[in-house]
Length: 380
Ligand SMILES: Cc1cc2nc3c(=O)[nH]c(=O)nc-3n(C[C@H](O)[C@H](O)[C@H](O)COP(=O)(O)OP(=O)(O)OC[C@H]3O[C@@H](n4cnc5c(N)ncnc54)[C@H](O)[C@@H]3O)c2cc1C
Picture 1: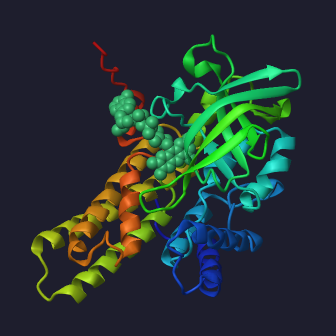
Picture 2 (picture 1 turned 180 degrees about the vertical axis):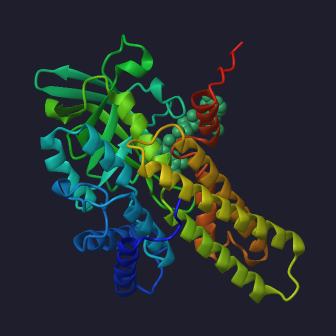
Picture 3 (picture 1 turned 135 degrees about the vertical axis):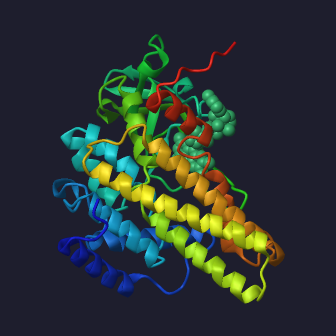
């Protein structure tokens, strides 16, 4: 593995860095989601317009026809420049590209990549989170339409989305995983009700979405009937993969911000706090090495697989260790009482990282069963 940019990559990086220097505003992202959303979206639309996102998608579907290295450089430079967070849509474009008909690719991919249309992921249900195959939303074929009934929950950005990539049961008699299909559902369809869920910090980032006899055209099936589980596993693997080295530059920035706070607070800081911060910094470095190795693997592998659970687990552990260090460090400065709202938000989001995209326990189960080949524990 060569850790240095090739001349072409170095040239790409320096052009991107110059673009970011001209385009990243000095003021921070608004703290409240309702204001942050248009800010993030406008920035990403500008990035797309100037050719800096959707880098590894082919040109004929609205991408830049480049590779994963360029995606990693983008991620790295965005973090370094303290750029607005990108909307988490990338992993939803992948299944549209891999399983979509040419007509679906043509219709949906470019607007998704350009963030002209917003998508959300309709997988989890009130009784089907970790056990996703227990989902009960149904889709029944009637003539030229599918009729959808059921409920989704914890749908990120559901209140902002135009389309939902939805999993529904299409064959009630099949073995659980085998009777599920994936659909493209316009959220403007009659019978859809979106109810925002308010988070601990006041943001309405999630929604629950109800589908009451929602009719969509037969052409909105993604992939083949009952191929939904395969599509869903591809989506979560893309969601879990740590090729996103932007996390690293963001975590490194947090460490240096915290180090600055320690220096400003006292000339003889608490040794226990210093130890915690040092351990968090070492964790970020381990994650960096791991990401580089995985990037190298991913460049030679077409599709990500269960090994993405290692990435997700490591990322979660590093983020939570870092946020625990921040919490002890900022304990005297009212992290949760409004004087450092950004850190409070980061801390809370760190708690969620061991849940979204599959909980930490589920990632460990996947590693045990699918990578190590260990037997499942008996339920007796
Ligand atoms: C920030 C965030 C964003 C999200 N965005 C979306 C989204 O956009 N779309 C979407 O569909 N969902 C989304 N989710 C939902 C997420 O996928 C689920 O919360 C997650 O899969 C866990 O499911 P659950 O909440 O139903 O918990 P449960 O499945 O009820 O789990 C509860 C606890 O039991 C443990 N557990 C369950 N089964 C096992 C087992 N077999 N072995 C060991 N431990 C087990 C879990 O680890 C967890 O600790 C999001 C969640 C969060 C926090």
